[in-house]
Amino acid sequence: MGPSMISRLQAMLGGDLAHAWNSARRQWGTQLATFTVLSATFAIVVFASVWALNLQRLVAHWGESVQVAVYLHDELGDLETAKLRDELLKDPRIQSVEVVTKKMAVESFKGQMASYAPDLLDDEQFATPFPASLKLRLSDQITAQERVKTVEGLAVELKKLRGVEDVSYGQSWIKSYASSVDLLVGIGVFLGMVLLAGSLLVIGNAIRAGLAARREEIEIMELIGATLDNLRRPYLVEGAAISFASILAALLLNAFVFDALLQKMKGQLAFSHIAMELRFLTTVEVLTAVGLAVAVGCVGSWLAIRQMNDGWAAARRSGGRA
Amino acid sequence: MISFAHVYKTYSGSRGQEIHALRDLNVEIARGEFVFLTGPSGAGKTTFFRLLSAYDRATSGYATVAGVRLNELAGNDLAFYRRKLGVVFQDFRLLKHKTVLENVILPLVIRGESLASQRERAMQVLEDVGLHHKAQEWPEQLSGGEQQRVAIARALIHRPGLIIADEPTGNLDPELSEEIMDLFERANAQGTTVVVATHDHEMVRRRSKRTLRLLAGQVSEAELAKGGAVWDHR
Figure 1: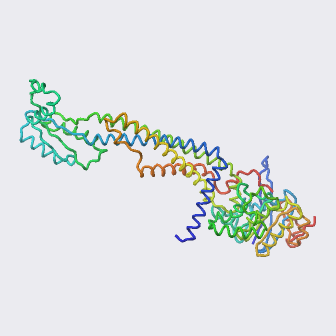
Figure 2 (figure 1 turned 90 degrees about the vertical axis):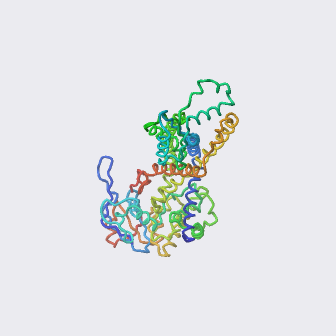
């Protein structure tokens, strides 16, 4: 790209940004209203996205600690147990299998209960041998997000195996939690789409108002040789600029709110370490949000400026007779 | 340069009847000519200019400018054709929220010329029209004559091959009108074809230029008999 081309681009972009700034000054009422509505809309979408991502992150985090215990029938012998273990190890989803015999299970239980209720160990009922089991560890290749779903699928398959009495994956409540999160994310995505569609209309109306106010200017520009691109581009830049300003405001607002909520959670939910897992958007996520908002701005503008065609302004003039 | 052959421009009246703004118009204007276009209101001068600036299309007939068939222009070709014109209006048509300088550079802005080039050329042309010292003022701060000079500077900045001016002195006093005509003559002296519509018969007489008289959408028969170039002494 030569210096002349750069210089032309500078002139073009500078002119378009100046157009956007002039619009903001000349129609500050409309522009302020548009900015406010868009900022509020984007703020809601960003807020929902931040918390949806964090809820999903919590599901993934809790999913990482899920353990699968496969309880075996009493009549299953050592040989068959070893065979079952070898079979399971062939499954790519499973990284390791630990055999817990009845004796080991009792010892483990006693060891865990000793400090809590030593008297309980003398109770005859608790001397009853526990079933032998296999403790499975999932492959590290499975992403944290996929773990809960993988465990659910694996449990169903394991239950069908011969010699398997029951399958437990401890934090089975995660399943309902994950379902709730999925439902919330689904609702959030739907509402987000509705709000973004509304944003298109808001931007489109602002640009339409600008077009009406500048009809004469557009007509003069047409007369001195402006192409459709010349005429449309400033309005696209205007839509993008107002969306850009709005998403920045929305992101800043959300960052403050998130920080305030996080501080509160750290104080009130310190025991659960939940707050340690929560975070605001990453740089990539922020850039994605900005990119999406700018795209929404451009599309909203485009919907309004589509009506421009050759002689658009002239066509609206009722005169023209000699 | 400009060739209109059997051009009709017809509008529909409120009761559906046909109204001919131009009727079998035949006009030839050579490159580098300075031509006055006269005629009463409603004679078709503005329609003629609308066709010349490709702002409207002839209903029938052929209208060409520098070999370009105006009826066939569309899309970007239309815009690129208009870039070869300089258009001046009676009511100046300046953008009031832009400074004098910003108004003048508009034709260069849409061409994507560099900022330095835009400014340099604008100051030069503003100097030509005697307004370089008012570059940063707003149009509303200028007198009528100054505003028209700004409009002419805007029409000249891209060195057009053809300038069309529709009643450019209609709102100005005689002294200012002469100044404006001097500017057109200077542009013409540099090779630009100039077509000026005017009601000012006295000025037309003083300038001794070729004059076309439009009447009811036609160049009048008696004047055509003199070879298309007519003098209007009314």
